[in-house]
Length: 348
Image (cartoon, rainbow, N blue to C red):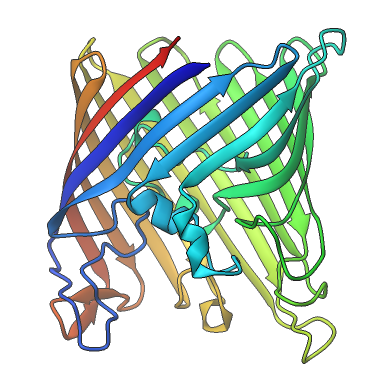
C-alpha cells in the first residue's frame, strides 16, 4: 500500500468582523467559503491519511479526513443523519482493471466527484480558498460505480451510476447518471462532465441536471490557466404536491492563472461570476443575487513537504448579503488568510 497524508491549518481575518449574533446567524464565518470558513481564529481545515493500492488487477483506496473539511463534506443536507459527519471517510472504493481490457477501469464505493476545476485538498489547487463554483454549483462526492476507458491516445470517457449528490443512501430510490470525458493534449486539457437524476427527498419527481466543463491551458512548464463553467438546475418537487414544481437554476464561470516564479515561489489569481436567481426557493446561496469574487494567492515552499500560502480574497454581491459586526449586512466581504500545509508520501 502507498501511504500519504497531510495537515492543513490556517488563520483567517475577515475585515467585516462577523461576530456571533444572538440568533446564531453570524457564527464568525467567511460566507461562501468551504473548509477555511471559520474566521478571526486559528483552525484545522483538514488532516488526511491515505492508503492506496493501484489495481493489478484489483486495487483499493481509502482516504480518512478530519477537521472542518470532514464536517462540511459529510453533513450535506441530503444525508439522512447529522451523525454521517462522524464517519471521517472522504473516499473508500475498490477498483478493477483487467489486464486485457484496453485500459478499462471500474471503481465501486465512495469517491469524489468528477465535476469542477478544484478539489477538496487545498494543496492540489492553485488558490487556498475554494471558488464560488466549488461551493455552490457542484457536489463533493458520490457513492456508487464509475468506469473509465481510453477511446484514443488523448481521450478517456466514463459512465457513473451513483446515489445522487453527497449520499451513501438516499430516500427517493432514483439513480443519478454521470457522463465524463477528458481530452488531454500537449498544450491544453478539456474536461466535460454531466450529472442527471432525481435529487428531491422522498420522491422521484423532479430532476437535477449539472453540466460542468473546464478548459486547462498548459503552454509551458511555469504558466498555466483555466476557464471553468457550470450550469445546474433542479426541478423542485415534493411528494405532498405531486408532479413537478418550480425550476431552480444556477450558473457561473471562473478563470484562473498560475505562475511558478521559481522552485520555491508561485503566484495565482482567480476571478469568477456566479448567478443565483432562485435562492428564495432553495437556491444554493440562500438569496437571489449576482456574485463576483477575486482571489490573489502567494505560495512559498519552505522544503519538500511544507508550504505556506498568503491569500487575499474579495467577494461582492448586488445585494446586502454579507454579515458585518453583529448587527448589519453589507454587499462585500474581504478576507486575509495565512495557511500552512505539511504533507508526505507516497511511502511503501
